[in-house]
Amino acid sequence: MVAPLAVAVCQNFAGEVRAAIAAEGWTDVATVAFAARCGRPRMSDEELAALLPPTCSRTLLVGRCCLGPVDAGAQARGQRRLVPDQCFDLVAPPALVAEAMADGAYLVTPGWLAQWPRHLAELGFDGAAAAGLFQEVAQRLLLLDTGAASETAAPWAALQQALGLPASRLAVGLDRTRDWLAREVADWRLEAAQREAAARRQEQARERADHATTLDLLRRLALAPSEEATVAGIEELFRLLFAPAAWHWVPVQDGAMQPQPGLAPELADLLRNMQGSHAPCPSGRGLALRLARGERTLAYAIADEVAFPQFMGRYAALAVTLAGLCALAIESGRNRRQLVEAEKMASMGILVAGVAHEINTPVGVGLAAATTLLDHSREITDQFAARRMTHTALAQFLELAGAEAQLIARNLERIGKLIDTFRQVAVQGRSPERRRFALADCIHETIASLGDVQGESGCEISVACAPGLELLSYPGDWVSVLQNLLTNSIRHGFRQRGHGRVDIGVTQADGHLLLDYRDDGAGLAPEAAARVFDPFYTTDLQRGMGLGMYLVHNLVVHRFKGSIRHDAQHRPGVRFLIEVPL
Image (cartoon, rainbow, N blue to C red; front, side, top):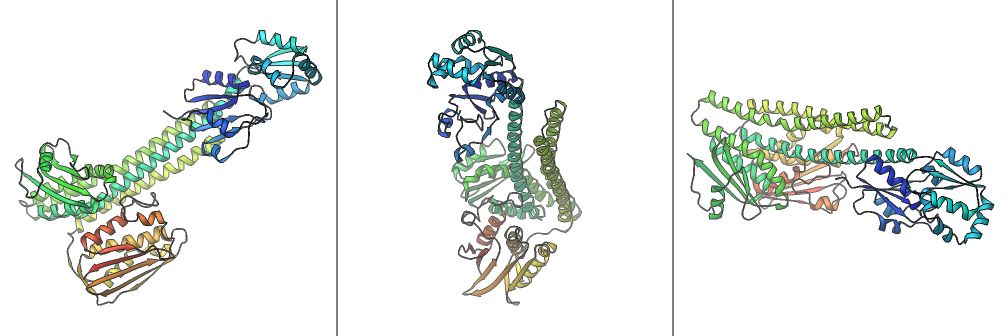
């Protein structure tokens, strides 16, 4: 349930506010009545805060001289003030109020009337003194009868007798009170709906990042030439994503698990009793996956003692996606043993088609955005038809419509890129290989691959690497490392400047290679520097998925058997030092 809106108003008008809320049937709006002191003294923020319900998300504070100045605490609680020219404007048109006061009338509300003896006593008057004073400042009494009080005849007669003034009653009803309350409640609900929509879009962005990362890492798996290569690719995929300290692969042949040396008895029992597609490990720091096609189990994969157990919920979501795709890859690998080259390509086409099926993620996001836009369109249409549409509501709807349209367009563009990528994989893809290559050529080719992105960013890149320096390593993985570093500099480091410089220096000593990468961009805040290699951590959810530097760290540490660190003392910009054995 949405936290209620609290309407804080003095006791003289609290009855009207309560009656208006009851008439509208608002269950998420509460009334808070404070003592009517008319500025003697003013109501402090501390006094008001003690009266508010703990679940309110906004306070509508109504009054004039009874209220003190706004402080930081009030603003933090979402306080909004309504200060009319006269308090009586809350129940009657301002023109009527001004005319009555100019005519010498002393205005009274049912709320004030119910406690009139106490009010006179607070002013310091007894009966005779009060009558003399009121006769000097007013010519008559006028009761603005809102109908909020069930009994006004007796106190009204008693007040007339005590003050000795002619009196009249004017029925004003609750229309004015209901109108201004309806506007405030509509604005509050619209803002709450916009906050919820923003939270949903942020969560959808995280989910898109997870799925996009999975598809990118599955590209090599889809092209594995055999079951053994597929198993190695699955292990590589899990180590890159989860960085587990313990990895187990348990194949299933003809419905029976194959014995695996070193598999703990409790893990074997977990696999035998597993009902769904995945289950947590007994350690609480890992996941076990069942890879199956239909009712047929093909294998079990266990990633235990993962590096970042705090992200187990996100790992589980990725695992559900990986299970079916990895099973499809295993089945395709086994089928390849019995197929000729043409049949191999047909199986590859099926595999790529299965991966391409995952484009339903951006389709779902686009559908959700379209649905949100449709719902808000209906809402603004209803407001317009009921003559309740405000300028603010229309402006906020137009802003929302633009944002949702952009979201739909970005997801349609993402779908097109996914389909084009899958076509290229099916025709041109090949397995990763370890070979000897010139590192300088690899760096320059990576820079060239940035193409227009580098030129548009105004990025100047300087490379200092001996042309004859060769490595026996994985050139594709070195390209991934360099691309992530350069892309981070261009997209994040130089984003607010439109230009920047990157320096890449390569040296070797004592059987090790040292790559010194630095830029003069915006740099990293202390919090970001401390978590730069954490999975799913990003300072910009709209432009990154939070896995780039995490993958760089895993490639350098686990694949290259080296190390990478961030130099927190480097200013300006960032500096990463990568050291790998030659």
